[in-house]
Length: 321
Image (cartoon, rainbow, N blue to C red; front, side, top):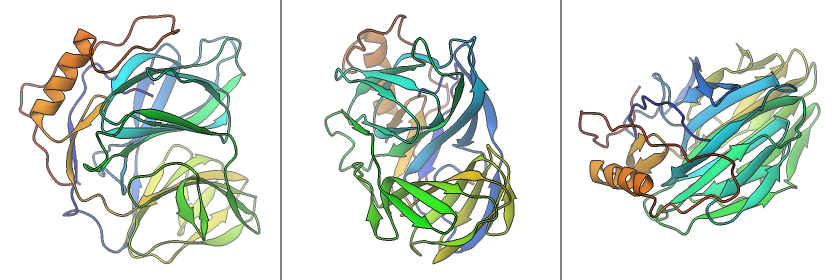
């Protein structure tokens, strides 16, 4: 999914200077952003209060939306560099196309993982016809310098491993949890898991002390370390935890996001992650001139134009809080 904001604001992130090294309970409020004709998302990262969680640098939650009489998701071709995109659905379908020739319909609890590397472009749309409801999350993972120029590629995993406990099923998107690992390719120590909790569940989820974590509420009513979460909100948890208490007051869906704090300093502007003003400027020229990012074939519509760069110079910095 793209950042479709026509007045895109650069986000400076990365570095460990502002990582919270102890357990905290920091509730993040979303910002409402419209994507296309009929999709509105709740943007949790980057956030005024928190820019990254491990290598996770972008989190949108959308739906459940009734799109029976709507076009649904319609995100025209747009570019990416320096990151991975993670498409995750609870309801509906999304048709992915990209400039490497990938064409894939993604359905609930199937992993669509696109590694942009040096440059890629893609589109996302609700198929025609499509299911009545659309509900999911779109996430980005920042690539470290050693892998950010890798060849672009797309992975699709229809079956993913799970970890179970009484009242809990955890599906592994990325990384490992309680000795179980996802087949998705990762480039930093990271974890992403979809948590399905039955009504009345009380469970403690094992964590890595050196990771920082956040939990995104997808649906239902749940308490995370004693904090009630409503759908579309996210709780930042800091580092230094061995386990995480979870309680469900109804059937509930959560996403656990975590990883080793990201050490490098980054610039995120529109759909690109770079390390300097010059890199972002060059990416914009290449996209507007039709070079480097390739062509998405088969999408019925024109590519998205890039927003203008801000007058203020872009500078990579550490994390902001």
